[in-house]
Length: 580
Image (cartoon, rainbow, N blue to C red; front, side, top):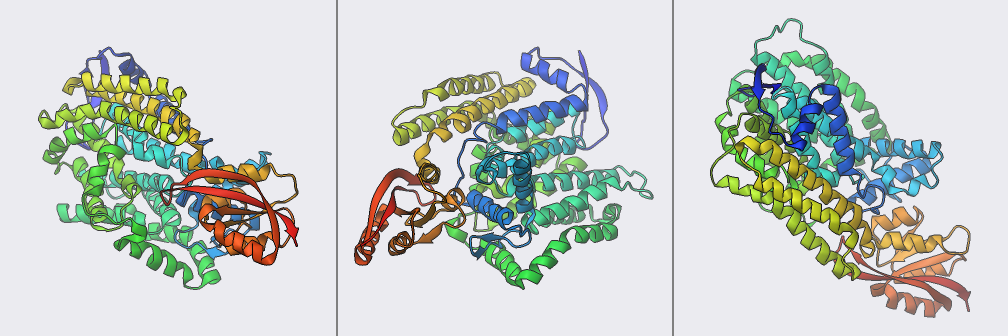
């Protein structure tokens, strides 16, 4: 018999109870790690590393967003200008400076430690995302402690850590994983303030720590991705005020001092960028980026309901349990804890569904409350016994479908099935099958753990083996490798036809983006110059070369696939032999 704690209602004081240990080895591990907070935190951190590190170091830069962020950071490091944000000569004012500072700190630290070519290693730029994803998981554990038992908090954090969407964002050098960290920190602190008010705790001397975390996290979120974090907190507060017909608890946040502290943190850079650019930053970030998402920005428009459809994939392996928990969560909607979590989740989800521009990662900050609500229902053994239970088959279906797609993709792209991934795929299928077969209301924890292990093996298979092996999907890396092997000092390049941000990142900030004729002119102006000409631009390149009497030879040809445009490409690398 193992003594733990359970809450009959979300967000109410713990009461000791006894739970029979199911006897599974995986459950035994959970029994051990949940014996203390230190063990729980160490276990979750280890799980994050196992889930996020496969492929972290050897997947090349991904177009387009990751490569754009990394290149802008690289230019900050090269120029020493940590106020302005640029991609080559163009300003990049869509997002504030926070993520660039974090990435620059990672690059500068790696360089100071003596790591060669640190500025060209994309995994260094991904370190803030890895920290953000891991920190978000640990903060989900901390937030969940306000609603469920320590054991339940570990499960909620595991659900988030193993989710497909966070697994992807942890490997990309952009804003979303770090934004998630700031949102969970702010909302976890806000939850404690709200629940203390609901319990009628002494309001005369409210603690400073929760308001300090809340306002600091808001400042961090603003510097990472602008005012989006204010939407999550603001809609939650507004919803709770309407439901409770009172917002008196907000005074416990010490709003006057908190707002002043937040402004102290965020205003210096905003003042500096306005001094540098005038109103260009706000015109681009608010008008050009945020408001344009109300329409179908960059062909990413989709009707309402897309996020609910994608949820079954992006929140796997937690999605089946979340669906089974939904009826019980709705019945508990007026309980303080459930009410808070639903206020965090539902209003913002509706906003995202109504906005025309839709990208999967937009709803990532809404996954922690889903995980906590799911565990709350799981702890009380009130998961749905209706047709929703058939969703348990999804634990096996995702590894099965993913393995088939991975093998077909590898055979199509590489003409070989990447046998090294097969043992990991097999293990994912076995644990996914166990999760499905063993599921019932009293064994939900065991099924979830098996599903998390399936996600772990799937991460090793897909991110660790299959994706890095698909070299034709990363032509920029192949081009950069070819240029590193040339026998001359300081090679310079011009690209025509293929101009993705990853190419600039991999071949250098000075890479000229032009057309076929411009590439020929570039080649004629010096030695140790190379023209990177995609097949569709070769005719214009050849005509211009003939017109100016340029003699050249082809160093190599790289066949690949442009994943941003969804089409095959063929890049010839030409080198000048002089002019006639």
